[in-house]
Length: 415
Image (tube, rainbow, N blue to C red):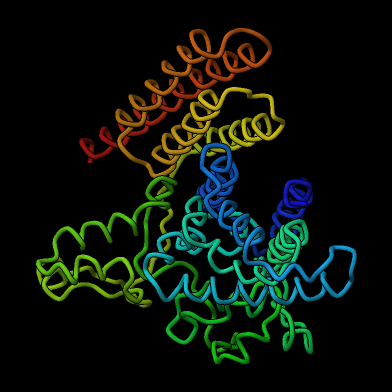
């Protein structure tokens, strides 16, 4: 059983508690732009399941049907204990390879792009992990561990990882030696030299201690969060595709066929020599690092939160099974993605004319979708009301941005 869906209300309450606690102790770790960007990615990762084929599920079925030892029962406690340990072992190697091989890093990188560290970061998930990640769990099916056991312990493993994404919990004594904690997972999300590519465990930190990838968090070297090749964007489409795009460009530009192919299986950071010479890619040093935090007025932040509620509600609508047509499901997921991309442009402080134009196009297409494709009923009425509120926000934000820029221009002229 996938328990993650049932844990969502607890996730929301925990994030609200962390936010309130941060203000109370004078150490708020949230920014609207970064947190909304993370939660957009988390929402899209769940919506992706409604439009992608279960490639991994097919191979799991084949393995269970023809290559499984079939020695274990879901009624046995030892099956559950072994599955819990083995799942985390497989996760360790998936996670580690996700940092050591570019093709896997391309899927995993979205989780590390946040330059803040809070519970919303835990929900910052990829939408392309399904392409190869399933391979690492094949041994569990080959051993004959029932699928329902694997899914359940996998969801519990993921739920456990949620609480370690916080700066408000210090070191936990002996617990640090056995289990993943906020302290040793902060190391994993840091871009400091000594912390890079360390602490891969999901539940047990023992794997890192055994295989030499453990690093303790040091008071003398506070973690700096994010990735060295900073994305500097809240656009979820860019977040999900920028490494794939870089790989494609390097493969296309490489002169030797061997390099063109090796790009896709190379260690993380490797590039063909001729491509690197002609198209150098600068990695910022830690000394040059500055969080991406473009100024935005309050109306944009309110709009971003409004859109976050909207896409979460749409995800709930999809998960409730209210959409019978696959085509309509695809349209709704595309609408979610388009909404998050347009909202990100406002949060990035881009050209108000561009933000206005692309958001208006989204709303107009939304009206056509509601009245021409989705039919009537309560969902259509709710969608129309939502789109109308969008129009109010869009005109208000455009007027606000233009008004501020005109005032700044007047001040420059007067000066």
